[in-house]
Image (cartoon, rainbow, N blue to C red):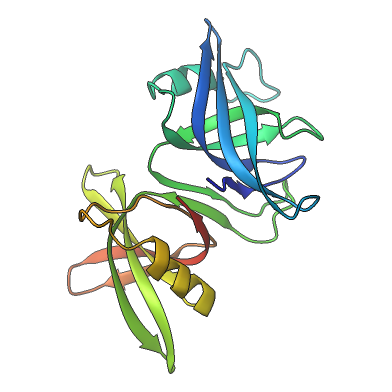
Length: 218
């Protein structure tokens, strides 16, 4: 599973990985996440394990409430073999260790540029189930539109977002890897995208979130 969705040496990163081990005590949860990364030294993918430590904050430099990241992680009832999305901050110079923040099984994690980070553009990771795929044309160029079920919205309604594959490479990969399995069950990818765009569907009186696909992994 290719899982380094976004990497920063000093700021927040996003990992999609498979849980291989879990350690727990009163104020900390340590999760071993395994994923594939590209290694230019051998010109191929290799396995990487990052040990992510989720801690409860004991002090802050501002007056905001303390964040109980360990308790939030424990509430997810994590199990070995499951795939998760998580925001982390790597130990400087190391991929093997990181501090963890938020975890999602399915849904959307986004990082956006600010004066406090080095991001040049938005980064989003979408974890969910491919509900459907259709095709269309835009100014004479083909595209695929993917309906991704990402869980419940804030009103407890089912939420589906649209992800567009517009390059020949992405279109071919979607057709190869994201179509249903032979038994009809649906694929559950994690998709790297950029900024979210909102489409107002006047017919059904709803807002639809739309994303441009940059990469994906299963």
